Image (cartoon, rainbow over all chains, first blue to last red; front, side):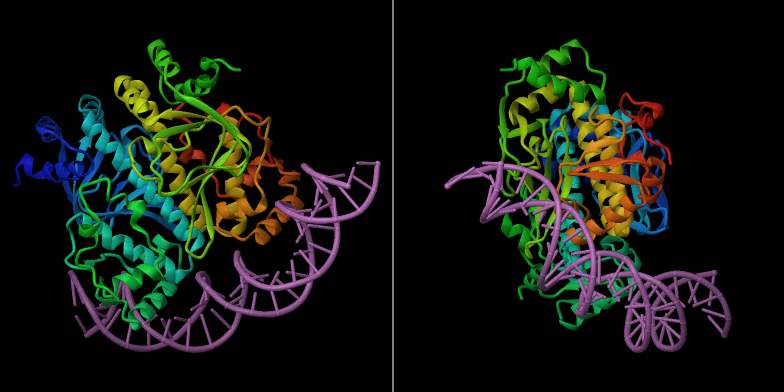
Length: 257
Length: 257
DNA sequence: CGGTCTCTTGAGCAGAGTCAATGAACGTGG
DNA sequence: CCACGTTCATTGACTCTGCTCAAGAGACCG
């Protein structure tokens, strides 16, 4: 049984990436009330229309936010990785406007909204860090609109692979440029607004061209520079620089080509 | 020459819709330092890569945020209407990740980022209102991802028309369900991820079916209920209820059909 | 070992794009 | 007040990217 501190430590790490927390900030975060749960993949954490009274933080595992159209089509609007706040909008919005679902078995920490609001008010630096987190989230949404609205299938998929690579790297996950992508091709399709069949064909060509390799659900970027070009990818929208990463750190270890 | 109070009054109105401001909050907003400018249509207010030192508030006129792909394609990621904060992300993000451009001749009020940060810290209710504003923004981005990713052209365009109708109505603009849409079909196309030619065809069919009427750049919704159905539109994501609007107010005056 | 889920591949189709020409609206200067 | 240029809207003909339908192959699991 992990201690309370051990469960909230990833949250300290996350917020410390966004703003310079002092010792009191650390202590205030670790003093938060919370509950913890581990759930199976495909579990709904929040459903559209609900009024959640807590905000969740993803300790381990992956999750995604999705919305359904009346035709039954699903669009994934974001992928959350370990160390992400997954529904910070509950902090101030009453009713959830989307569904939040786990991608894999996952452990989340739930924090009462009211406690988090107090924290944001009483510790300005933490408030700032959370603001930044929410704003970066919004920036990623904007890029996804561009991705889905104006890029062709090949570019779109290369782009999202680049995004995962850098985000996982920034979160300290994945080794070199290999990363576990625990998504089915159907889920990937729902994230980029394509059909699973077409995603499959595009992945095949990327793999035939040796830009990536695939095994099971793990994808390995073999030629970062080329994939970056194919995906029309610029990391500006991830706002990694705002944090503690220099350019060298961001790109270190990614294979040229 | 309008007084200082007159220029900032719309901002008070906007924030008051998001949270219950008291007299001190009002005074604090009206005491903000600011400069004001009126610019022509198509003027860039912020360019991607810049580090703006001020946040802009749109007093009159329309604006949009857009990003360009390396192919030269443009995607509009949001439309801002009078009374909107148009780049609240400058509050805490250093480098702009998108371009901000006026759609029409517009008057904006620029507020130094530092002054706004102080305000957010010193007046918690105002901070809360701005949080909500940013979170609603993000919610709209999510819906746009769905719109562009999973809806066909007809549904997509009907949906965005519904969004404008309600947002303009909530902002106290537009009479009945008539509203001025100061966009070219090319701009509308860039907002929904289609080509101008196809937008034109879809608008024609909507107009042939008497769901809307068009004159110049003004669009009038004739059969709200039907258009809402065609556009697979649900207003939840606009989070109007969080504010001062009841259901009756939101829908009042929209023509049935 | 059968069932289910996911991946893969082919064949044919269609929604939206491209290219191109015409027309309408508007502002400007002569 | 009219001629002209520019911008935007409209329409047709044709193309193509990505979708649909369908079948088969792996992989995993109880």
